[in-house]
Structures are given as structure tokens and as C-alpha cells.
Image (tube, rainbow, N blue to C red; front, side, top):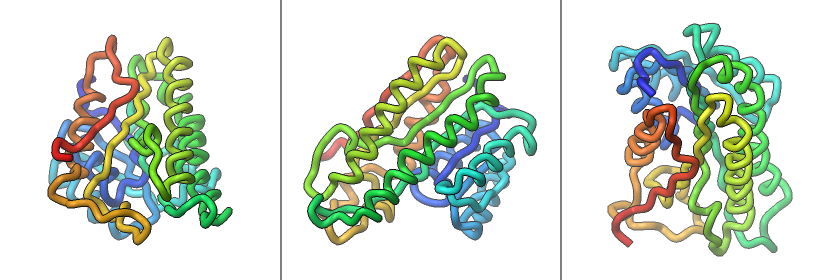
Length: 237
């Protein structure tokens, strides 16, 4: 896919992997609707995208609100006249042993990590299927494939992301919609700074820019090929 003048929507775009993917898409020529709960961060990102010669439209929204999803999913077409790429990056991690995990923490993770992703996909598909080729990227995790102490709720939600992605890929590939699940290992962002998790050596783990580069490379594959699931691991153990 040639990304020049293509239009993407990225959730969880203001920080970390979402921000890095937005910038990498812009470098490749895309215009972007960037969504998160922090308008200040989004405006800063939009300025950086503008400096790259592309356009960004920032949207402050909570992805747990179905009505807001219905509103912002229309914006790629309304603002830029097209909708080619959906990147479901918004995510939430609450970590602790199963016996200590609150019902609220469990529900919050499923609401952001899985329910919001489903809603974004469902609302975006009518727009994406208008195009001869389009892409949905779902940010999963190696936690969706590997168990770890303190990760019962988070890992379960990411296993759900992988299941949703696999079913969607089979349902929509005949319609020209390529679906890929990205599974990074630990990434040097604010996300994994939590007292219940080991503190990884930041020199030995992935950068958000690494994940972004590989993701955009996969998006740019020709239409007859797709990466349905991609694991990204650090080289150093």
C-alpha cells in the first residue's frame, strides 16, 4: 500500500506506541485523525505531523463511550475525504495477582482493551470496505500469548484481542480489508512503570519507534499479502 495521501485513524495516539505510529504514518505520507484523552498532547503531536508536511486532526475522546466512537470514526472521511487505515492502539494495564485484582480493574481493562476495539472496528468497517484496499491494526501484546505472574487480567484481555483479530481477518479478507495483530514485548514507555512489575533494563527492551516502524512496514505490503500476526521482541534477553 502506497501511503501517500492515505487517511488513518489512530486511538491512544498521544503517547508511546500510538504517538510513534502516528508520526511514522505521517512520514510515509498519510494524513491522520489522532484520538486520545489528552488534547494538549494531541495538539503537540498534530504540530509535529504538520512539520512533516502532513495533516492531523486531534480528537479528545474516551474510547469507553460508544457514542464518542460513533462520532470520531466518521471524521477521517469528513475531514480528509477518505478512511484507509484504522489503528486500535488505546490500551490499559492494571496488574496484580488474580486474588488481589479488583472487579473494577478487570472491567476497566476489558472495556478499553477489547470492547472499545470491537466498537471502533464495527463502526469503521462500512467506511473501510468502500476502498479497494484498507487495513485494520490491532495492538495486542506478547502478554496475549505468554502468561506471567500479576498479568491475569491484562493477558486475558490481550488473548481476546488476538481472537477478535483472527476472526476478523477471516471475515474481511475477501472484502479487501487486511487485519493484523501486533504483539510487542516490553516497550520503553510509561505503560509498564508499575510497582507490581519488574523494572526492565531500558537499554535492552523495545522502543516505541521500533514497533511503529515494523507496523508501518507491514501496512505497506502489497494488497495480495498480509501479516495477520506479528511478534516483536528485543534482540537482547
